[in-house]
Length: 290
Length: 110
Image (cartoon, rainbow over the protein chains, first blue to last red):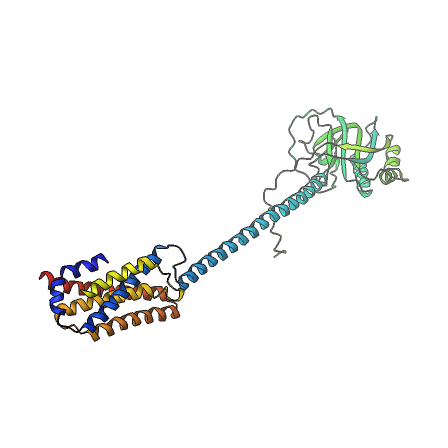
């Protein structure tokens, strides 16, 4: 305003000289309009000094409101997404824990079956005394198979330390399940050091010791008396041992003596060493053979 | 002379009365003020050029205000009100500056 008045006042003389002969109507109308201008100017200045949203135009307010609401929508969507991922993560943890628990149970079961974990439970204790060393590998294999037929789930055999001369460490080249090598095929590396307890698993094998001093089980020489501990249904297993012509009868016929004692809880503590497979790898579950 | 006095009187009246701008006029008043300023500067230049005509001044004054308000109103309807009012202010500002330059040349010969 001052800028506007300044040139006017400084040029007033020229202006007056130019405007003096003019009609008064023009002066009056010009004055009226100039007064209106000054009035509006001051009014606008006053209203503009009141800052904030009161002076903002409607479209600006709508724009601000729109941007605010869209921003809040974005934030809300973000919150929802984060909550979803949080729920996913939490649920995923639960599922992972459940799967882990299941896998651990399965692993425990498989370990018991594979003989790599100790087991306990009801079972029987089959004690075989063989003072004349007449019990052969076949007899023990028969006993083992009878026990398996009767539902034994974990079996171990204990023998006294054989009078082994060889101290060669055993390297377990184990034959197929349940196979029995004949006496002539005794592996020279078989006589173990002093392993008294052997876990009987699917790949266990019985071999007669060359000098009839005992029986080689999984490369470990066991001498009588033998003690087979099996976990399973005690009644079924003891019945299976005692059937006519069965294990106990066979032992008796050979001059040995078998005794079956049922227990509410027996311990199978011997472990079977499983070498890691050198060639076989777990196949993906999705591809069914081809 | 009378115009200058009237301007001062208007300013004083505005200060004393301190009126509130009606909501409907709020977007248009600043633009109208700038347009009127442009008309006034144009009138001063015309006086100095010796071609001033009171009818022309009144018509240009009112027409300037109306056109500026119309442009802003149109912009509001089209949703580009703030941009258009900025454009009007820029154009009128340029005109005011050029008028002021002409006045300055007349008054100071420079």
